[in-house]
Amino acid sequence: MSGDHHDHDHDHGHDHAHDHARTFRPDQDDTITHYRAMEIAVRELLIEKGIITPDGVRRAIEFMDGRNPEYGAKMVARAWVDPEYKKRMLADGSAAAAELGIDVGLLKLVVVENTDRLHNMIVCTLCSCYPRNLLGLPPDWYKSRNYRSRAVNEPRAVLREFGTTIPDDVEVRVHDSTADMRYLVLPRRPAGTERLDEAALAKLATRDSMIGVALADTP
Image 1 (cartoon, rainbow, N blue to C red):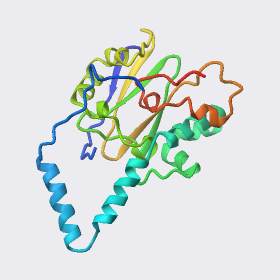
Image 2: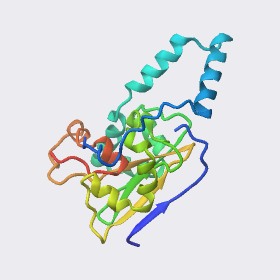
Image 3: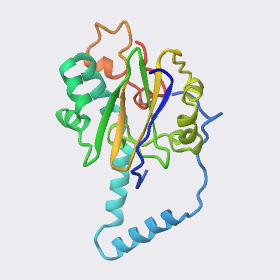
Image 4: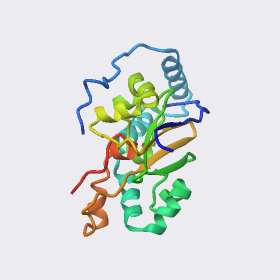
């Protein structure tokens, strides 16, 4: 089946290279919302009771901020050179990550493969659930209402704004992340990379290509 399809699973209970400023503007609203106030209150209570410490919170934030797309790219590159690993990764993304020493926690990781007949794209329609353990912090545009709504309703238009044009005979499938499930796109291996080793291939698997808004870089 060709056309735009939304693979939608609403179990949400969320936390959730190009210049996209024209369309995807960072959300600068610092309003103390109900959930933000709850987070502050719970954090301060846990600190007051000695369950956590401010330094522990700081170090946890530093660890999260330090994550980047390197781990996801490592999985992609291995799949490009090892067909058996790719089969295992598509069958069980979490187990495939563990094979490479990557911890995705208790989340279910689902890997979806781009082919010459199918292009996959990831969104979280209710907030910003995202494979942070593999890709680091989500970009501001991923969290924006603009992307979250338009990626579902007009994915081809959104892709074009990222400079990605998908032929009409290729299906575009949008996957909606949930509180306990994350998606990772396995982009198509670029042509002309037959002689590149795994480390060089990993550099071609960009964050945006693993979200599905771009294609993998060419050498």
